[in-house]
Image (cartoon, rainbow, N blue to C red; front, top):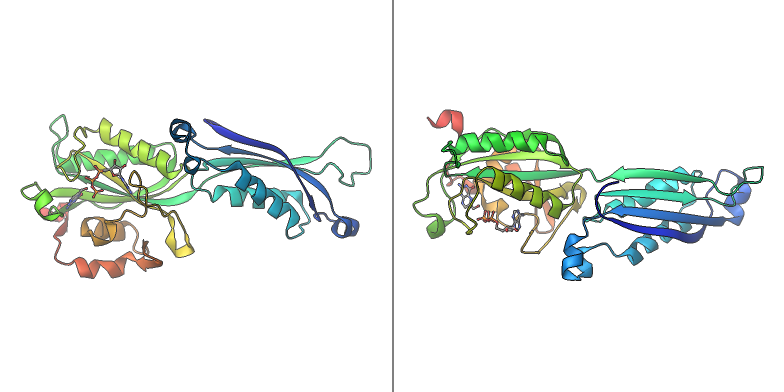
Length: 299
Ligand SMILES: Nc1ncnc2c1ncn2[C@@H]1O[C@H](COP(=O)(O)OP(=O)(O)OP(=O)(O)O)[C@@H](O)[C@H]1O
Ligand SMILES: Nc1nc2c(c(=O)[nH]1)N=C(CO)CN2
């Protein structure tokens, strides 16, 4: 494991897991260690429990699994604990050790344990946009293409697929009046990073590719927005009202420059709208007034 860690060891609970009938009937003690990979910098700087993972809640999850549905194998118990802990959006990876010190081994022994290591693997959607030349004078379309290449190479993103690029009229009324047209695209990928870590990485790519000013709605050499984290169709997406990272992106549903490229790269995409997962394809017709044209056809 790498980076910051939260380590919880020796959580003890009684369970009825095992292959033998007497194990199922009588139960025995299980002891669990859990190590979480979590970026702790924000919590350390803010002293805010909401910015970290409550180890008390993790301990309660462990006990619920150990005391829950009896399983034949400790592997299954460990896997279930790992899956539950990984649901927390700040947890990037987890190591779970399940000890069974009273296991019926048949000879004197100290302990037997299994260790499983699992990483987050979550679908994400990133919107790319640019409407100013890069620092080297390169066209916005070239910046978007470079950003797409960077996303493909990022540690923490995999299975990256990028839409075609689209030329789009600026959306945002008076705030964007007079701005040049944008070039927009959407990348879909899977990530092993927590949402805030992923946004920090996207901000680094923006800075590297020439984003200098940071005034909202201002024309820019590159803008990378995190549109959605997780799968709303499975009820497994992260929702957040945090102004530093609002999820899903609150304006995505009204932006043809996001939805049309997204549909281009993933025609089955769904976006959370309130309590529902809505097909992106079904949201696009309402936005027909917004001009969005594939770059190669824009002339
Ligand atoms: N889902 C999100 N994706 C990207 N940035 C977000 C998100 N939610 C909140 N933010 C915050 O928004 C701030 C402003 O971002 P940015 O300058 O890219 O906005 P913008 O592109 O001008 O406007 P918009 O958010 O409407 O696209 C960032 O500092 C970031 O922390
Ligand atoms: N067409 C278009 N309009 C915008 C865009 C954008 O990427 N494309 N980004 C904005 C703020 O992020 C505001 N308006």
